[in-house]
Length: 331
Image 1 (cartoon, rainbow, N blue to C red):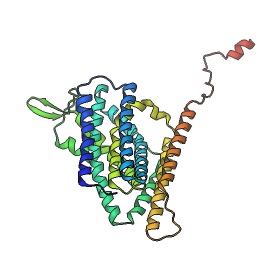
Image 2: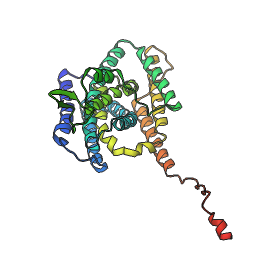
Image 3: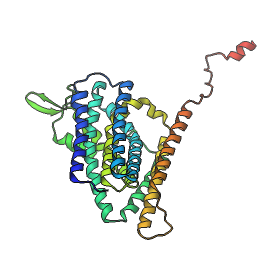
Image 4: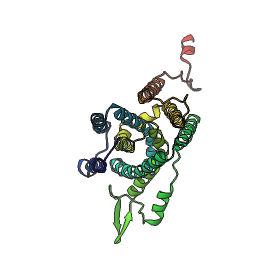
């Protein structure tokens, strides 16, 4: 897939224009809370844009590349659900007002998009130069999948280097000033907690990119498709945050489903590397099979999670100070 610098430039400009319109035109100075209905509407808009872009890839470059894009987009969108848990913790930790949460999340996504772009560029350069990098990516995804199955502390959010550096170097106020990232006190400029949260969200997302970027490289090695799939998945992440709300707690089997997907892609990467080194028995897993596995796993884990949440709870024990109804009837 050959993508000219002009197409790259137009794509990046279009993505930035959509984000700018969201921040500075549609939701500027909007003090309303982001309701579920509003989130559903804008989620549909962002998903529609992602689908339209995929159709454009289909028309211009063929079904193979379109399938790779959609596979990458669905994978990145699914893995981004883990981000939502961390976002909830960060917003609660800094006590971000509800009406300001959309702005700070979108600004954090911009930082995440820039950092992921750098990560993708490095990964693409490594893969194009060294075939053995596929072994490393595959082994890392398998290791990550095993760690997800074993479980971990998802509620702990540690300050990373970028956040610590920003708080140490840049003067920071303790109080919010509406939705402003910078405020003026006694003639001096201070970074508000909104800016701190923005940096925390954007830089923390990179930790998740360590898993998701190798995963999408297992579906496509085209940097343009990797970047655009990440971009569309990230742009709709804010709306997904408000749409799902407390539903994330009900998706009890989602972690196992994501672990299976990462493990599957890890095996796919290792098989691909073996195939490149001339191992005849190592199969090349086609993209249609990858799409089927990803979609089927997500559907199964979501249905199983929601079904488990609807199971009737066990009969509650009778309190010591409450008489047993059956005993009362027998009396």
